[in-house]
Length: 251
Image 1: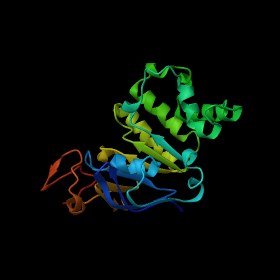
Image 2: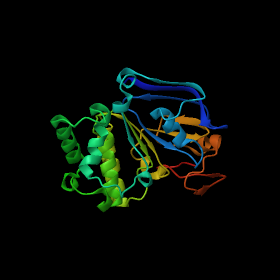
Image 3: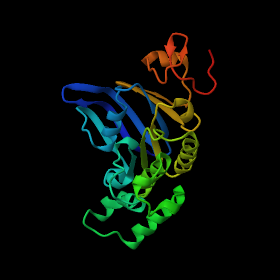
Image 4: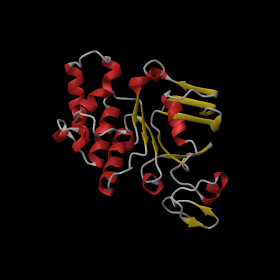
């Protein structure tokens, strides 16, 4: 197990508003971290800091090993589906190929090796049968598979997913997490979600982001821990603290 990202005492935000305050987190190559927290609490801001899209106002983000020199290819990102324009005239295979654009360059033609890697990734995710379909014809579950294939086609060290279960059915949701469980054997995974009950069966650790970050080296959170940071996730009333129950919940 080796450290691949070190986030230390980071403050970050937009314009004059500070969203993240004194956030620290170490990410190791076999991590599967579930990130939860209220809307506006800073989950997306944290992802933007890790992705290099937002520079911290204070603190540091250190990338280790090959992430330091090849971050674009070594960090895979699956955005929220509602940010994707499905009217854009592009096929499934072209979307996945675009995940290798940093390797090949914007003006370069993709090599045979790139196309073979894309085909292998499509097969691994189980969408070879729709590789020539326009993305506008895809269901929500199919679109998420395409975006996942794009995120992993470059064989990243770290895979980041921003609420991947949005707009998909329950059958696909279970299938998605099984795929992620297999991918975690090869790469670290960070997943942002509101569906704590589902991810608790798959993730190894949980971080709650509500301006600050509280990290739990387990996929279970007690009532006492929730009380520390007042994090209302899928409001289910239980005592005085609103939260979602994770697996067996002693009280």
